[in-house]
Image 1: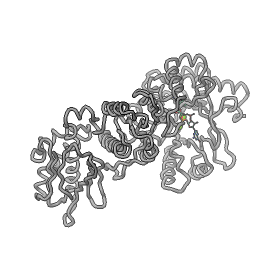
Image 2 (image 1 turned 30 degrees about the vertical axis):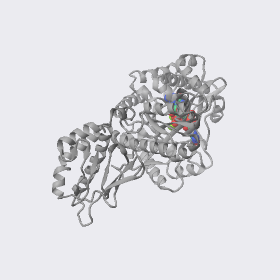
Image 3 (image 1 turned 60 degrees about the vertical axis):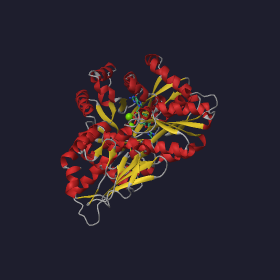
Image 4 (image 1 turned 120 degrees about the horizontal axis):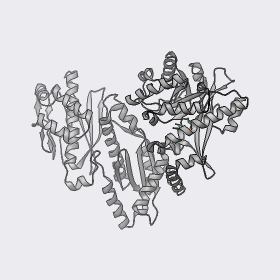
Length: 570
Ligand code: C2E
Ligand code: MG
Ligand code: MG
């Protein structure tokens, strides 16, 4: 039972000594930085403030500086779920919004009474107080009966896979299974959220998100949402609610505020499957999963409906994984080239480089790298392809020279995984020397990363490449967690600004201001810049005006086969 009582008054000093002494605050922040384990937090609090925590109850006192409780509430902890936690900067209040399972919601607002002074210390107290309630609700929820635990996801409090299975079996036995649609949902920007805010806040955001999915599934979809682990969920709802669900999931914001005081936008990917008569549990889960795997791919939209042809695709991927060496031997991988252009002269763009981009030719179809590289990255097999592509680039450069053409610098993509291979630089060097190619015609592209280990390894790799005369380029800058501060730490000759950033430029919005600063900073650090994914003249004009003279994008040229690319060299 949670008892949150209002009406009792304690003096501020009293409250501070009992709830929010600064040492207690330290404990809290320590724990919350490490993990969001309610048990751990509960025991720490129990030690510090036994008067406030009585096994499963919280007594929240109304203090003279606060008016913490707008309504007095008595309810069972199993009946409530935290929905949102939100800090209002204007009013210095913290709102904890709880959903009551049987309907309705309760908002607990901790605010200062109008005639008090809102000191930093008081703000801290208020924060601690809200966190306390929040954490204890989490704890109380995890100590629900064992049966509930078995069917509840421990982190988020929503259903788990076991509960989902139970729900689906019931739908089968009632003969209504085929009325449902199954959605495999994945959080697209979970990594960014975790690195931006910390893993523990990431968990809070994940929880808020999970609870929104669950509320939708239960209240509007007559179904269930279960966490399958990590940032993956299965949402099982009535088929005629699918469109509504896809609209709903496009715009989920979580109002847990800690650093920035802005609601965090959670982006989703969904693979969905309309269940047919005769389907079993496994078909339903795996079909939605297959569609979601494709949604992870850049060449697909974020919301993908399952189609039977996708099974063939998945099968091909499995075959590829087992047979990469064969696929390489059979020359199934084809290297395409996308020209890069100098745009300094309006209306007269000139090819000044190219990027080698791999494709997999299978059964008369050219499969783009986004569909197989990510899967191969996991297994490490991607390295075979990367060396193969570099080798092909060397062969092609030699060929162009023998044709009397003047080659341009060609960049080849390498997965970050190579950085942890002690032989990486040796292997690159061996390939270039084997083909006797001028190293200044080769550039290595590696995707941005700010993990300290990667940065160190990158630094060592860069030194080796410079000795050899090969340049380095950081790919997809701005797509992950990059900040302006980090630009100066980047070791590379070139920074490629990601398409996702370039997409927004040229409209005189705030994006333009930020990008123009990024460009000028990269310029003043003496590094080269390439803007990726430039599609419009408007973007090119903006880039030119802001001193970014190198682009790669459909505006100038799409990736093309080698036979076509030679025309750009002529
Ligand atoms: P990337 O290295 O950032 O390559 C640029 C991608 O953006 C290419 O996609 C290119 O076709 C696409 N692109 C360029 N300009 C535009 C534009 O104006 N609009 C749009 N919509 N797209 C544009 P692609 O060829 O599908 O390659 C995707 C990713 O696959 C590459 O991104 C790279 O990360 C990876 N990749 C490609 N080849 C290799 C390889 O040999 N090894 C490794 N490890 N990764 C590779
Ligand atoms: Mg690249
Ligand atoms: Mg890129």
